[in-house]
Length: 86
Image 1 (spheres, rainbow, N blue to C red):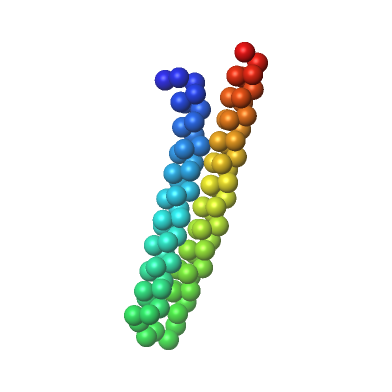
Image 2 (tube, rainbow, N blue to C red):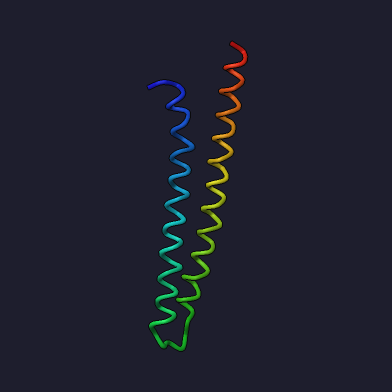
């Protein structure tokens, strides 16, 4: 495996984790919405926790995605520097 392909794998995995977190957050959000509209419970604490949890997961997914994008940027800068120095 070349050095370039090994270096790009890390941010791709990080980005895949961020996408997975966003998908789970979407599932939580949709589940809380479905429970909210299809039940007539007096205590909506569980529904509210799913709803709040989905937004917390969205925030974490955004942070992880930012780290992946910054890593891609660093890889690009180091690649350009190596290309220019040759």
